[in-house]
Image 1 (cartoon, one colour):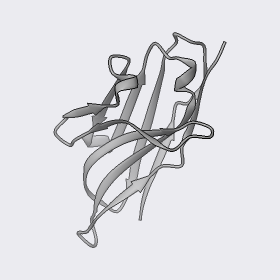
Image 2 (cartoon, rainbow, N blue to C red):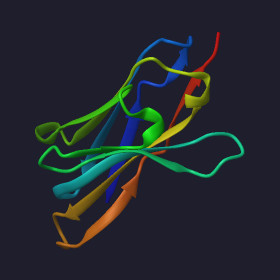
Image 3 (cartoon, rainbow, N blue to C red):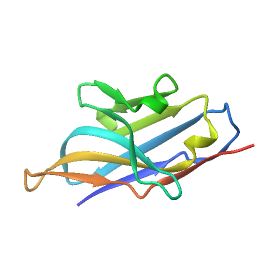
Image 4 (tube, rainbow, N blue to C red):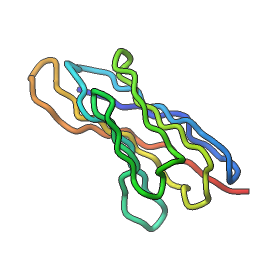
Length: 121
């Protein structure tokens, strides 16, 4: 079993910053791609950013230049640094990871429980 636990969400004023963290634990042999998605009220979940094990990144257009995804492979942790936040960034942010099981050798996609980000004055 694999667990992803997010932290770092909260209330921030427009123009402010937040840093989200997501730590993976459990029966992990290796972690391939990791990423962040978000879901705003009344909207579908959407991609925010992804990062490969080697560090290659991809961002959704709305967050390019403002958000930075990074990871620490030794800690099985992915981060999302969010700067210049806007009210439209308000959403529940979910991390995800493609994990190869230490026991089975199979790879599966896992999701965290989500952390709320509210951007409001």
